[in-house]
Image (cartoon, rainbow, N blue to C red; front, top):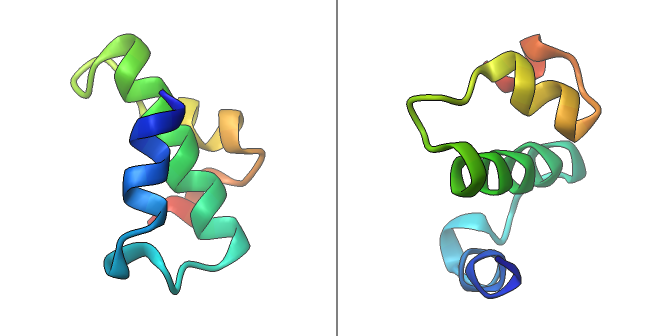
Length: 57
């Protein structure tokens, strides 16, 4: 999974993310890879990232 994160981290599209956005992004990638997109909730992403669910929106 680290390689997938590095691909996105080094891309121009993600270079300007704030620390909180980066936590959410990494959490989502991690959970999507484990559970799949359709089986991952925003609540799970937020809890895994250590942020409020509202931060995702």
